[in-house]
Image (cartoon, rainbow, N blue to C red; front, side, top):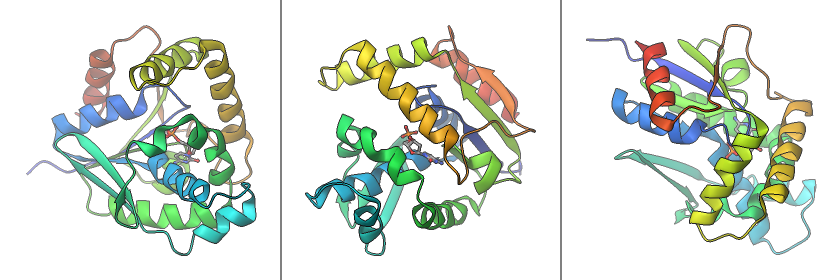
Amino acid sequence: MEKKLVVAIDGPAGAGKSTAAQLAAKKLGYTYIDTGAMYRAVAWLTLQQGKPVSDALILSVLPGIDVDLCYSDGKTTVSVNGTDITKEIRTPEVSKIVSQVARLGPVREKMVELQRKMAARGGVLMDGRDIATAVLPNADVKIFLTASIEERAKRRWKEMQEKGYAMSLEALQKDIAARDKADMEREISPLRQAEDAILLDTTGLSIDEVVDRILALCA
Ligand code: DC
């Protein structure tokens, strides 16, 4: 039987990681793990408290949170404490506070432990910001997926339009740039390309072309 690989994909917001990784996982018959969705789930539960967001509020929801990712038929479902919040975690409100959530040590410790458990059986494609550098440093394949900020903003803008959120392209580009900066400059596990990761610049590539390149790297 072919060896079931552990594939780590990191990169900035809007690089096309989740769309491409999800499709590549389906073709490989692997499980796709969207680690950003896990940080978003913590952010969502924090907002549900209806109080001003602070580090203390974020940490207060952590002990009682049960985040579950279910990947089937090429799609991921995210639940918190049994409630399906797959759609709710993609709102601009969640995106706005998620970097603040993701920079807290106790949040990362809890999520990373879960992520390592999910990857333990192999045959997984995991995407995030620190997968190759911190979560799965022994991954078989490490890919750093990126694209120009203009292209990443355009892709997110199209996605948001399709979901019915009205946001200007300029505002979205600013948001993404701010999130990248926060993710790259945080103290714990900042976003950076692992030394042994392969750089895949998706600027100007179609989703199918990105998927083909990922599959070629896993062959
Ligand atoms: O991939 P995404 O946009 O859904 O990620 C949401 C946020 O979570 C992003 O701003 C950075 C953070 N994140 C992280 O710190 N580590 C990961 N492994 C994945 C995401």
